[in-house]
Each structure stands twice: as C-alpha cells, then as structure tokens.
Image (cartoon, rainbow, N blue to C red; front, top):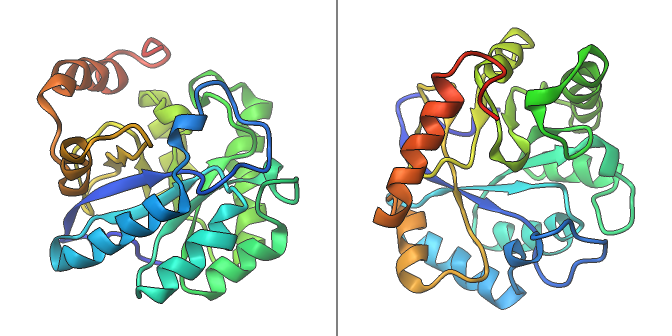
Length: 234
C-alpha cells in the first residue's frame, strides 16, 4: 500500500507510545511517550494543516497503537504507518497478532522495524535473516499485504544496511534524520516527537524544518551514515 506518493514531499513524524506504558521501557524511552491529551491535540493540529499536514508513523508496536492511536486516527479521517517488531507481538504492553490484522484492515500501513530492537549495522547472516526476512514474512502474513517499507531501529543505518534492505525488496527506509521526505527517494527522514518539545520545536517537526541547533549534527550524521565505507558509520 502506498504511504508517501512518489511525487509528494512531506514532513514525516515519528510517534511511539501514548498514555501509560504497560511494559518495561528501554533506557531513555520514556520521554518519547505522550499523554493521550497531548496526542489528541497533536492530531487536531495535523488535521488543521490540511494539504500541508505531515505523514504520521509509529514505531515499536506498543499496545497503545491499537487501544488509543487507531480510534483517534479513525475519528479524524487520518492514517499512519506502523513499524513493528515481530518478537514483541503478543507480549504484555505490545500489539497482539490479531491487532496487526486489525490495523491493516482499518487501512493503516504496516512496516518493518525488525525482529528485536537491535542495531541493523551489526547483523551477521543469522540475525539478518531474523530481522529482514523472518520478521517481514510474519508481518506480511498477519497484515495480508507485502511489507515494502522499513524503519531503522534507533535511527541507525549505513550504506550496507540500505543495500541489504533494497536487495530484500524494501522500497523505502524511514530514518530519524529530520527534514522532509520525498516519495521519490529510498531514504526518508522523519521528525521525532517527544514530550519535552516546546511549541517552536513541535512546529518545526510538523513542517519538516530542521532547527538551527540540529543542523551541524544532522549534516555530520548524514555524512557518516551515507558516505563512509560500509561498516564504518558506527
């Protein structure tokens, strides 16, 4: 299913959990969880932006994707891409297998976030099979659709990762590099929403503008990820 049309360019947001987590969070993860009220206010702001509105994505497959996000998206006529981890399915606090089917049947896009939440730059042949093939196959079976989009865990990737994913038939890799994403490009930057953002930072994310303080670090990061020889972007 098409998520970002080839001729379009938009900001793409990354969201994670909503409300109270029902699983143990990874170190530093808590700030990426939004209250339900703040999430709903964000969706209302997106609706008000009309054609300039950003695309919405969710990472990690938290239970709040089905319990909170889907009803609120549906109420506003919005859709999103959900990048899921196959190993977390059916675990407490995460989506169940049937939830993946329900999201797809509701018109949402299902994408690959891997098997477990690990850095894709350091995969051997066995973990690469788990992350790229087994996880993708399971998500395709549950959603009833081919999985053609992926999102890099932790936003980490290098030239080797992009080459391997493209060889597996992935059509686009969503990152956390900030900026605006083009439907014509394989690498598509996203803008991460967190609970500490002030209004100026949130506005920049919604519009896909890279704040001044982020620009030097972003440029350095992009150079390391895309230009250095494979395996040297860590």
